[in-house]
Image 1: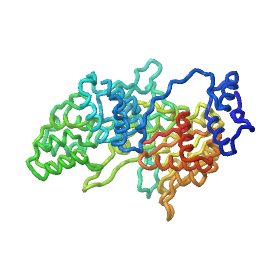
Image 2: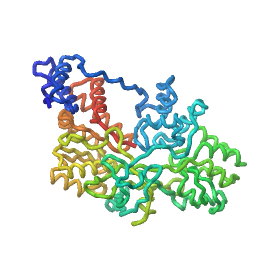
Image 3: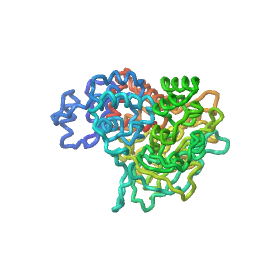
Image 4: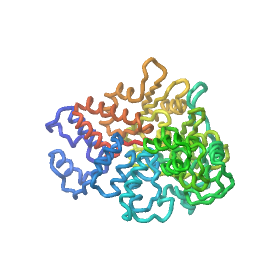
Length: 534
């Protein structure tokens, strides 16, 4: 293997900052054999194309930017084929929550292989509405679908066991749901351990676990009471199952996001003019955050709809994906998760996260849930090169995959350095996995641990601030070929971290903003800058 430094001779016309940038670029390249490397290196150093076979140019997706509003994304996709317009309508996170990435989900919808258009949970209602609009405009050009479940197959079972997947989930038992926050915290974060013994399921670090949740029975009974319906009446669910109404609401129906179809039905069935006006406003402007199906029924008041009509207007209850917080090399036939319980009060009613409260409160030890493995996307896993450094940014529950990464590297005895940025509200209450991380520091598995607890001082400090404080060191790691990972909230944190990273690259590398963006784009194409955001 030719040393990367030999690609940039001392006599080459570059200053130290430019040389550092180029060495960082070449440090990410792997697999170049000595026999071929000389000619490639010579050509690249001379600014000439190598003699290797030409590579097909990658298709440009100018809308594939999660910072762009949907209106701008659709303009950028104007004139493109249906599948590309559908892609532009999605959230552009490639988060995998739909069981695909944005490109493959849009292609599956356009081909008719995936009839469920509500899977892009980060995109929410505006994505779903735009997809429906595009499909309506396309008309007969979209092939008829064959089922309501899609064709994505995720997860692998070995030793002759059946293939457990999104379509065919495994019934796994809960081992524990252990609080990670200390008494006095405003949060309730759980370490969830699930038994996979006998399933044949295998996963890799960086993968996610899909969980089919069930709705809270209290919410289901309140809806049935509001409908004045019989809980035992048989109904056809959005998945095509026939079940008693209560069971259908618990297991198959999304009660979180009221559909336009439900709002339209209620507008025509309520005799109250004020209720009609409110429902029409919700149709035009969208429902407020946290507004659920029961809220809509209460707005409609004395409307007259049957249980069957109601169910026909509901979307299917989709699985939730959680980053896996364990390595099978460390925990065997188990899978661990880090789950933040969502519960709050709004308009005198307690609102609950569907899957998080199920895992925290409604499933007991030894009780079962339906699960499947969603393989990681875009290279979100430990580097193939055991010597490559890792920089991980995971505040809050975003720490989950990095617990797995560290377990994996410890089990492999990988010599590469590991640096973790973790943040939360209070160090005394919210330092998730503190004992495990401290032990990793003492054992040398974790080379650096930088924390940011935003509520402990007069000034709020976040992980991106810690990055800026250590800019020179972080840049040095990047020049050693470090892989940079981010996991957590896409709305603010991930964008703030990327801005900080770009600032460090331009400042420490002596680059313009455009050059810094090009450097970051190169890292992305080399899978050295990878995000798992939601």
